[in-house]
Amino acid sequence: MIILPHRINVEISKRIVCSHQFSKMTDVQNSKPEVHGDSQIDIESNHQTAGNDTENSSSQHPSSSHAGPSNTTEQLTLANLSGKARRALIRKEKYKELKRKNKGLTSNPNPGYSIFSETEYYFENGLRKVYPYFYAFSTFVKGRWFKRTLCDIFTTEFSLAKEYDVETLVKEGHITVNGRAVSLDYKIKQGDIVENNIHRHENPVTGERIEVIEDNKDLIVVNKPSSIPCHPCGGYRYNSMIFILGKELGYANLRTAYRLDRLTSGVLFFTKNEAATRKYIDDITNRNVEKVYVCRVEGEFPEGEVVCEQPIAKVSSKLGIMRCGEDGKPSKTTFTRLSFNGKTSVVQCKPHTGRTHQIRVHLQYLGFPIVNDPCYNSLCFGPEKGKGGNYQLTDEQIHKLKEQEHNKEMWTVKGDNLDYPKRIQELRKEEKGKDSEDLNDVSQDPEPDSKRTKLDSDVKSDTASVESFTSDCDVPSSVQTHGEQRLTMDGKPQPPFQWEKWFPSESCPQCKKQYLDPKPSQLRLYLHALSYKGPDWHYQTSMPRWAEPDWEDDTDT
Picture 1 (cartoon, rainbow, N blue to C red):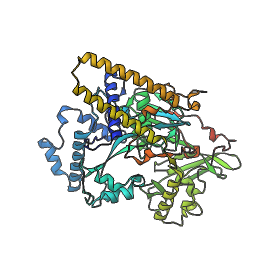
Picture 2: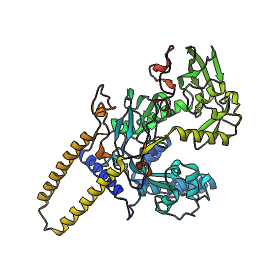
Picture 3: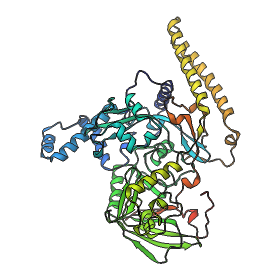
Picture 4: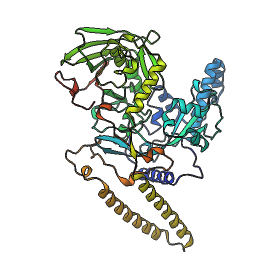
């Protein structure tokens, strides 16, 4: 994560949040919590590929602290590269140097703070939610962005433009290039790094407890619930498996050997060291792993073995939508019907390749889409829902229809957030009180440090007690009353929403609105990774309830 320098005219709420987060980091430093696995380095840049592990291990060596080639051998290697490879290497080193200068994380085994201290979880209406927090997005520019303005890029390729005025964000320096504010007419160049500093709100996910199947020195295996992504992406960061395991079980720098779709449930494991990462990735890439999924599809699926070998192509990079087509990549999936209840069928799926949404796209092509698939069981792919590759629409038309459908389903605004003005007023009073205390401290005769420290701590203790009492009174009785108590992964009771931990921002339009919680149907997909079996390892889960032969759907539609 890249931390941008503070600006002079910063919002009152942002100052309070930053101060609060710094205090939490200080508390972590004093308590020195136990952390499992590798040191707490930037997990978001390390969990995606195993190649990054080598880079991180070399960067911790004293001799590799300088960016770029530093000796004759490295210079000769650079000179021997082709022009394209040389430019790619230079961009990579430039990016690493900028990250090294600006990021707030460290490879120190005991850094004194944790990336997991930026915010906290709370649970409400069966959902896991995250208190909003400030965060700087950072990305290396893509080839299609060259010679385009920031306003053009963010308006066409990011959902940010739906909530924020991109032009204002650029003018005020919230969106920067290479760590510096730029003009509205600045054209993106090769090698630029774009950063966007916003008040981040994350989408809620299911609040059910996550089952741990295996936990040893090399990896941790879980039964991933539907709705939780494997790693940070889009509107999910703390509400991703990587962060949940890090915050609740203390595992830092976990690595992914493979990924499951956000809505797909089932077997998922994360490795804890480089050797294990290489082993499992090699098993998967060499196709030495037998993967078994189960799903529930519409209609009566044919008996016997059904093989689909249709190539899979991309419809939209922005929405991540795929389709079958001759211009796609080779793909193969074997299907076998397990049961039929008169309306829907339970089907066993064995993917032989690992394309994005492969099982879902192949089932759509066969004319038996997954019952509750929000993406591929849709008329946006044509009157026949893409059966037999008969879409009757262009990729651009499908993208437009899916985008409209997606916006209608998600982030439904209930109305204005009536608690927002009240909380902002409280934060202003707290900030004003702190400023007055600072002025009084300067104008009055100095007191002994020990006495002043004790008085300040007594006042803070009393204030905290009052706020805690008030918070308890403000929590609805339905939340306070616990029937069957639900627990987090570390065995603690799921915490409810706490007023004093909510820090809205005056510049954030999302803080001013109240959103409806997603429906259960929006958090569940009847596709489950049942088993992953390698040459010398095997992990599996029990069959999900919806895969029982006589099961009938009783959720909302």
